[in-house]
Image (cartoon, rainbow, N blue to C red):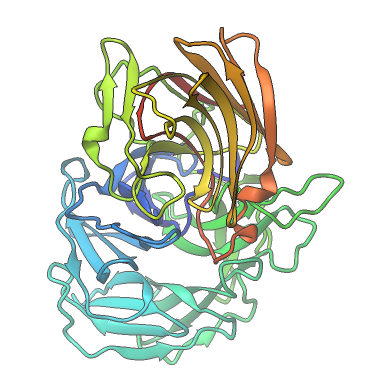
Length: 502
């Protein structure tokens, strides 16, 4: 059966997966965005629904003054004896933690913190009842643990150096046919990324390296615009077939030019796994992934996958696809269902700061995209800005917005790249009731336009897509572009927010 990669587009890095009966559950990193740790559900490994988030309260997720690309790193989800366990790292708070639940619809426990160094934690439940906790930071650490309390039952040991690549991380152990298999990500999470595997008769080793490591990587495939393949997790379906989910990126390359840049973040790719006669896994096409692949999926594909987004604000609750930046002030976000509008109460915090501005957004999931929203401002002063933004982090974003000047209103295009902030263009408009704002995107640029009637749009400027790419940021970054709505120093009213993949 043929299927399309990525199976979950947009910023969804560091996937971990588990199966319970016919159901698959997958979690990813969430960094400085709130709520934290999205959890997806699927019956066939291709059609995924975002169920919600594992860290959905301020008590469970502290992101105060969290740096961009800080916060929540690399969760692992496992199911054991009727209970889901999840472990991850809050690098901006107390470090490694575990949460658990018997019922995903009723939420997760409060975090229990684990006194073990390293990141990318993972749990392994052995047949003898022992539970092992693994982390990585230059090498792999292990201890025995009580997963309900976070208490370590043994000292932490350094037990594996990896297979020779830099930055061994994302350790996952599986017991298959009596042997312990250790899957790692190595090479760094950039263009040298790869997945490697080893096996041993004892969990502590010694480990034998797979002779055809890396078992998946695109590090030497410069002409393939799927890159950075690595950081994965294995799962077996009910038919006995094995699969790997892993992160990868789609670059801005096209037929004419190879651009090693990406703006959508690290996305999730799927490949079938078969085992050779020597008991080693062979992933995809000898370790390679493609946009279209084939495998014996555990269920039929619906054929109705649609990653467009639309909100007319007619329902009281926010849909699960929304995120905030760090811990939001909830009373700044009001869904006025009677008038079908979102009211954002902006304060002095702007989207240029390491704080929690009045901002709400959804992941950009396709290069070619159109976003529109109808905007009105109220209580405007000269510093009021209300609009829509293509947002990577506080130092990298473009926005089209309304502001108030002494002689009336303006529609403006603002840009913040590195430490350069400019209003690149502005158009004076008459006293207004509302204005349509639009962002069109492709692999080369974002285009910004406005309309008074929602039909005829006037373009006021562009911003190059390369400005919102991970490779161009000042500091190493791990996220992707969002399309967000925001208000600063005043109140904004929004109607009919839509993001359509072209």
